[in-house]
Picture 1: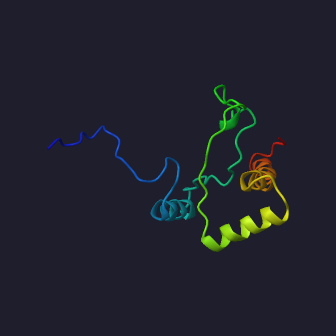
Picture 2: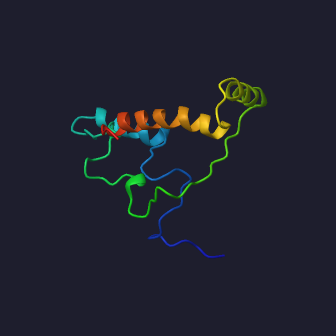
Picture 3: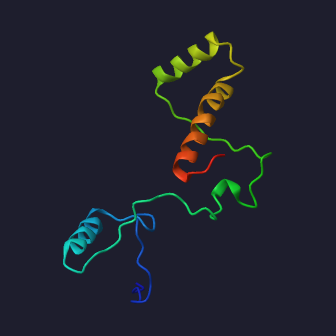
Length: 115
């Protein structure tokens, strides 16, 4: 069995930068102590000069990626009913027409940028 060296980074199941409850409690405790002010990151807005994932150099408008949507059966039947009654081209086109404007609004809210 190979023993890990002390200089190796320990693996974690949480993404980098995400504090768990113990770490958050520890930071809160430290910040309450005299002279122990620790800045907690409250803003999630990216800097103005940050390149967002969809603005990267390798992102192409002509490439279409697939995402499977799992719905409970009653919700799928409702979706099919709405698409049929509104005479939409397809379930996919209906979802895109409803989803994309909301995604753009959420991105604008999170980044402070208008798309």
